[in-house]
Length: 277
Image (cartoon, rainbow, N blue to C red; front, side, top):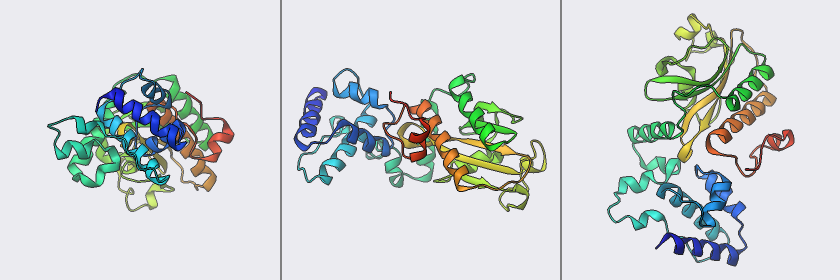
């Protein structure tokens, strides 16, 4: 099926079912889609081209919605137009939603590819990220706040406030542990934590005692790095703290991937932190 025919089919089924582009974008983003709502609107209007991976995520997201409303129509995935696509390529086209079909080694390679696709590695600090790390440092009243990307060997700091070393080996980085979590990693006192008490970053500079990190999703929904705060004194971590760190992490993701359509945390809407594209 041609791109034009696929777009006409998509517009027709949305009109027939009463589903909105807003519904589709939310489902698409939840599956790990990487383009913004603005770009998705442009694609549906025929003014923007999606990569096959993103097109397939969009088709899967739309078909899930169609099944939910009892519609029989289905949108074709773009990958069916590729005659020599391997089963491995098909699995990878699903993004993080298909990670269970990949080996751990393949999952890590896909994650590393997503890091590269951000085009942020080895770039200078930017105010759009520094603004968020400043908010995190001020709110938590800590010595350091960073936005970190984790590649195959190191922790690259896209934004850093405080005495944190650039390009430290990922093996000793707390953030390397965070990207393996589905949710945040909270270490209230590193000297009392069996996982980290012997870590050189605890026993030596910067003498980490408190750490709170939230994993960041990038292209395809893969975890590419973290937003974290660090201090040299142990401290407690409240539910309010958790909501704030999550809100700030979502803002970082919006800078990387493009704004989300609706906040997934009520506090984000109340704080006015989510911007329409």
